[in-house]
Amino acid sequence: MAASPGFVPQAPPHRPAPPPVAPPPRVPVWRKIVAATLGVILISAAVYVQTFVLDGSRLDDPLTVSGGIQEAVSTDVFSARLDRVEFAKSVRVKKQFGTDEDTTDKVFLVVKVGATAPRRPIQLTSHLVTADGLRFDVTDHVTDTATLGSKWVQPGWWGSGLFFFEVPPDKVPGARVVVSQKASTIFGDQYLAEASFDLGLDGAKAGQMIQAAKDVYEVSG
Image 1 (cartoon, helix red, strand yellow):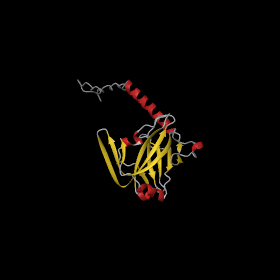
Image 2 (cartoon, rainbow, N blue to C red; image 1 turned 180 degrees about the vertical axis):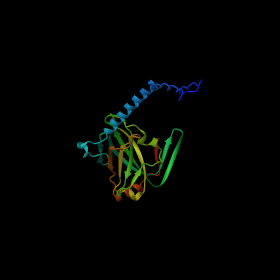
Image 3 (tube, one colour; image 1 turned 45 degrees about the vertical axis):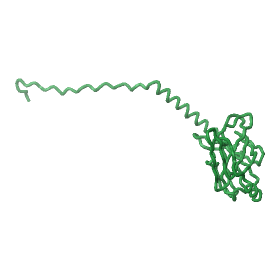
Image 4 (cartoon, rainbow, N blue to C red; image 1 turned 30 degrees about the vertical axis):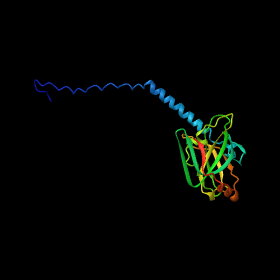
């Protein structure tokens, strides 16, 4: 069909050019350094944890070594010796600016433990296991600073300290004290070695010692 006189054909609509593609943002150098550092830390942690996994040749190695009073026993990370067992009706902790004293409706069982480490300083903790399998952790009625648990066991020489337990008198016969390295707050307590000491107390001997318990056990802390 012929166009009308004076008609100008409409030009096709103009399409704007697409916006230029922005280059990807540059990663700051400090982020690359942080990422690399985190990678090294994670790899190191994995290697550290792997050192605690027993291989086939060590699956039968004992994690607990046993002994009796005044007998030194050794694990891979520490050696320990149970020097003394005593009983008390109350414990008095003498501090620089005061004194704390606590009594119990049970009996305080006090053990003196000597210890040393072969390679590096470590800290130890303890618990008591009765003949029927009950577990008693160290009492929180005696401040930790008065116990071996607050000290660092050093390589090369023997140090000593006390652990305090509150135990029903009828649970003392046949009990044993277990000393172990303090668990890591990061990696937990996988494969921690421990030393178990038989207190050597039957019913008669335990009864005699509890009957003769000190009215007050004094310790500095």
